[in-house]
Amino acid sequence: MDFEQLHRAHNGHRYRTPADLTLRYASIGKGFLIGSCFADGLRLNFDIPASPKPDYILYNGVAKLPELSKEKAREYRYQLIVLGLRFICPEGAYIKIGIGDEAGYQKLFDDCVDRMLQLLDGAMRYNKDYHLLTFVSNFMTLQQNPTGRLFPRYSLSNYSYFVERLNERLTQELSNYKNTYLLDTNAIASSFGKKHLSDENMWVSSHGTYLDDAFYLHDLHRMDKTREAAGHYDLKVKEFMSAIWAELLASYRVLQPIDPVKLVVIDLDDTLWRGVPAEEGVGREPKEGWPLGFAEALLYLKRRGILLGIISKNDEAKVAAFWDRIYEGYIRMNDFAIKKINWNPKAENMNEMLIEANLLPQNVVFIDDNPVERAAMSEAFPEMRVLGQYPYYLRRILLWSAETQVGLVTDESTRRTQMMQAQVRREESRKKMSREEFLASLGLKVNVETIMNEHDYGFERALELLNKTNQFNTTGVRWTKEQMLDGFVAGVTLYTFDVTDKYTNYGIVGVAVVSQNRIKQFVMSCRVVGMDVELAVMPLVESCLMTAGCPRAIADFVETPANLLCRDLYKKCGYTFENGTWNKPLCKPLPVPPHVTLTVEARRIPQPTSA
Image (cartoon, rainbow, N blue to C red; front, top):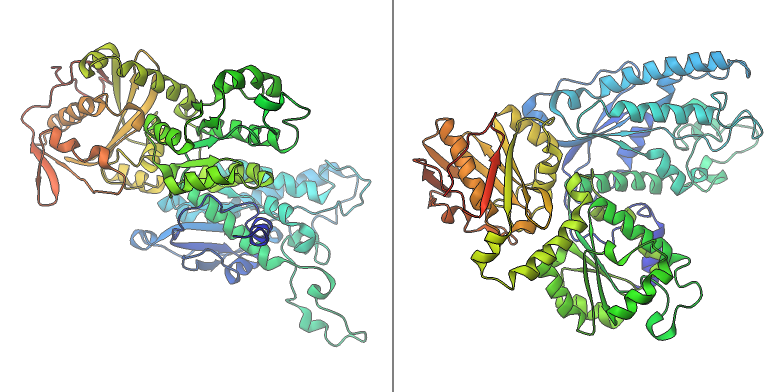
């Protein structure tokens, strides 16, 4: 892609949702679009690649959503709800209140909130019935206070603020629904430029949608020939609609997740700072401007649970000496989980880093200012995402791309850097001992708990593991929250396990999905691979099945390109492969490895025997 193409891509409808880190486009499936005027415009301008157009349901102040059977509901993956502002704040209701009548404005606001919540509740029917993934659009605020620019900004007598408050109340209400997220249409409009799309310069304030030429035909017989709206204003409504769909797609990719980034590895000179301080000394303003913004973006990624790494051809002692003089504690060397600061080939350092982190190249972003180094890294790891040519794009790409975002931050996410640093220390110890000596030295403790509904501790982390883990994942199946909630109703139990050793508390690192006597999926973080954690958890699962009266255990396994690490799990546990599944008679559970101390939640799980 040449610079002109890149410029267009970064300034078009994907401005808020950059696609630079996208490896594959996946269909989001069939959906519902529910609303009136605004929603109809979105229907006409649907723009999600490789996905079918959503089914449109006209919904206004008196509409009622049609019945939907459970079988039919399974065909749909999402719904987008766009409530009509004019049905919440009727035309004329606002303008009739006296300018000093704050009590009148408050009464109208309260009435509008009641109507909004009533409308929302009706529109959420499929979400309430089937936990259908739901996005709800908010309302566009006005560009100016229609009463006048010198009147109070933060008063309900300013209709723009009035709508802001409605947006705030709407967002609060969404937290009361499951599997529901705000689609911030107002923020998209602001980024895009409301002067290019808002109808406030012509329509009544409470219409609150985009400007079009729907009624131009009625004005053709005026004495003075007039122009359509597009003749007066530089409209970009179609691009705006595409931007809304791009935002929904990005949100969907975050929730799945698709193409997640787990490690960002950076060069130092002319990447984290300007120039080459080891040779030139610390010059003036080596971090001002884009470098400081880039460093802050890295810290936001760390907060999300993404690991940071350094690969730099440099002298590590010299780097450590001038680092704090440049960044003065803002970003520290210790913020980076793995560091390879030496004169070895960068691809060689990257290979070592991938082994230490137990990550695949497609989960890594490498950033370097040197085109030769970027080309060499791409040659060595074709699946890796490589950036660095244009520093002015870096912060936005890293922060706004769906592939670097998460639906929530778990406790394990916040400690991921610390855990990776502990893992590096653990690996250094391992190299000095035999495997048996090393395992015995760890003081390994594994605690298993059950999850039977979304309110149990660890549910969100379990869902995160199921949707992010690739290498130790017996089926590769991804679960939406809706699917897991349906699974609980059908009798699915999750067995989560957390791990500690003398180096760190790794948190919840794995989950087994069990339904009746079937182990549907076993997933474990690569951070604890090689410690026989899975061989301690499997006896526990088998003990539970035996207690439930199951004479035989069945285990599903689907080979994927990435799950080499767990292909022998069930064989090691004594299972036989027959008729497409692994199975085993349950006479007695496996012994727990002697170097593991296993604890369980006694109220729910029986204690298996130790070896």
